[in-house]
Image (cartoon, rainbow, N blue to C red):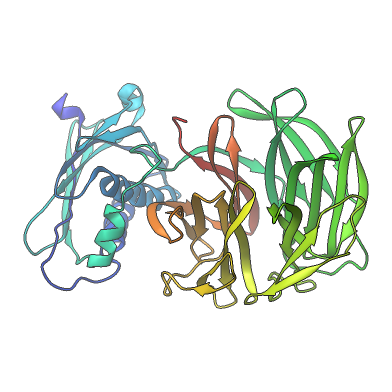
Length: 448
């Protein structure tokens, strides 16, 4: 059995002095570069990590993050077919599903160790077909104290695996948002919002099955856009099930209600609703306006007392900064905070009283979404190798709990659920050889 497990030694060692800010990623990049060169003359190489051991002071979550960073980089290599066999990490060791090991070409083993002053990455590659070690390599890098804190960040409501990717499939291009709600039969329905239509799905085992669809009549004028962006909102009120849909290609948003199994237009509002909240016992639609034909929001949050048919009576607003992305965290229908990524791609936070707070002022991002008042997901600012960051926001701050690499560009993030798991949907745009496709991913806790 020992012969069937190769060695990929990952040495991550804490330093007493200052550290560079991207040490862990630099180690992973050097390792990936070596494997790229090693496998360059081979095609469709099947590779997997089959053993993971932690001998350092880092926790299981840090080990999991480094493992995922490496896998994300290797997944982008065209000639490597990476297989992720990891089941979970606990008590310093990884548990793997080795039933597929006989189908692999190369097996790898990860070990985390610690020393007083150096951070290093040692690599040994084992060939299953040749039944011998075929490569050994060692790298060194420094890791900053802040980066180590991020790697060590604990999760609070999620299992030792933290957020993980539970679902992935390809969708039509121009998908802008995903929302879900329980239907009259109690079964969850998933609404996929495109510029001119909404397609409704239901879950069938590990896949989505089309239930119905309907066309949208957009408010004129229509603004030409490079990439359509929009937000969908679903909620129940005294009038029953209500849907709002708006985007950057048309002013305002449509309001529709469900009656006799059909969605019927009930009015329009001249901003894009983000949340349905109760403030001082009055229900409100809360949202923002896109700059016409552009991919960012203007500098105001709007509050509209809700009634159907919809109108604009009583519209109020509060000022924020122009934003590439906005979402509102809430609990029990009450506004808690407004989360913003500004035009410089910096994260900014506003309290319920619209007092600006600035945690992680250096944090850059592109998309974000809040899951009630508990969790915030934010994407990196990258077009080819993106990243998702997950934060605990329950205490009003922004505490990092998990991160995961994404091959492609995250176009949108939406809070929701997949079957019984809470988490976040992500629309990921991938481009290769002049072709473009959109992948839909769901990241959540697998054991809820």
